[in-house]
Length: 361
Image 1 (spheres, rainbow, N blue to C red):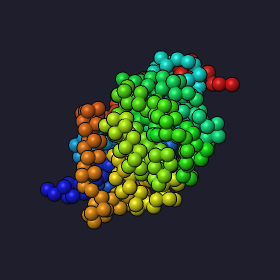
Image 2: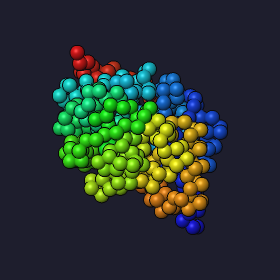
Image 3: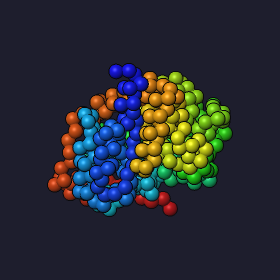
Image 4: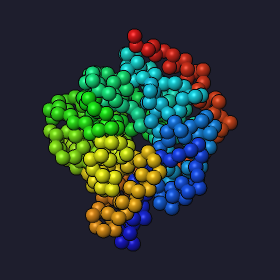
């Protein structure tokens, strides 16, 4: 088989896709199965109860060809928690950090991962490794563990270890740092003019320490860093992803984009070109929150491959990086046991752990 044909056949591995509804429709299931989609991301409209979402993740995994799919969610706590009713409500990162106890953060991270694993989720886009250095930041704020590198690093590494100990992959975000912005990348393209040396000594350290704690996934920021690359935001920047992450920081695991449907990308780089640019830059996995956009991006990358505008080596390197991590951490798939959920999710014991965190005044 030619390398291009191999890349075309395995391209779907590089997509993490959202979809509508509380169960998996036949058309969606067919696309996941036929395109060999690598994983899904669940949002609040996909959730009704622990039992329902456990059935949904089982339906998703029934579409796998061999290795399990990534089944992911944004489950940070505070205002970013997609599964709420019947799950333990997780405090905001800033409130957890205010306890001064990385050990308590580890306990909270552990219960988060246990509850997610119980319903079949194996990847959580958490923790936030951004340092809250700009008080006008509209999107990070209390999602961050603090205003200093030392504090953020201590709590991020505790959260990483808690997840890994309990069988859920954590993904630190948003590299190379979303804390010093005054613009929300959901709607516009932020620019960070922080000096390169400050980025090295401050923003990048929580990420480096998370990697040393065996975190094997990092999410990119849709932010321009002119000191490094004046043309492309981090998600589309070869200089940042291959130059900084791969070469300078020697990170060799999975790089995943933030949602490719955010305004910072779609309004500036085009829905058709953006997935090709992200893969060329060094992203291994691309998130699309909607099935429609995921299908369109998949078709656009197929076209780029077929016409020679995207290297099949780039695609196959990313495919193998995702599949290697799946082989390492997902192992043999086992479906959630719905009868066990009441003793695992939203328990009094879990509530007692989070009750140790008091909201800041």
